[in-house]
Length: 189
Image (cartoon, rainbow, N blue to C red):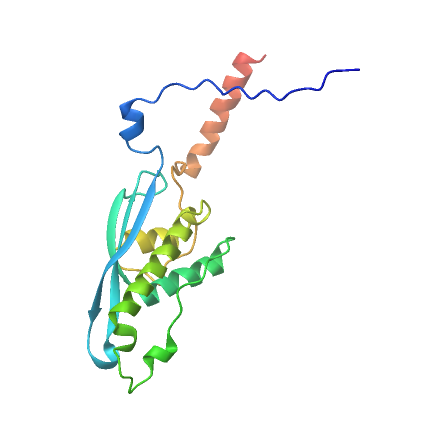
């Protein structure tokens, strides 16, 4: 009769952590805060904007620290663009609060501090879930939303390349081909 096998429960040998490892910058990070809501305008032209600050060391983003001001409709635009052009499941935005927009309310409706804070928190969760998705990080609309002062709604959708390949002059291709063939024949007779 054979003896029962026992699982090896020894710990892996790991190097001890020093102060640089413990307190240095993380290898990859992406931090996005939505804060400082400001209500602008009067009457029907009144709306709230939020500051969106991003800090990262991910190579896909051209700016490592950016701060832009966005309103709820800008978040809606981003959601619609991602649903249309990407292959990811886009999380929901915090609700439109249609009942809060009715006239003759006894409160400030969508401009009440508690509602603005609740919406700010929901927008922060939304943008962090989106930006944390590796496929969404390649989308041009996300980069524009996080890093450009204004959103160009006529942009051409597409992916962002980290290190795009150099563009070759088509007239140089025959010479490049000949050089490659000669190099091949000289090393492989």
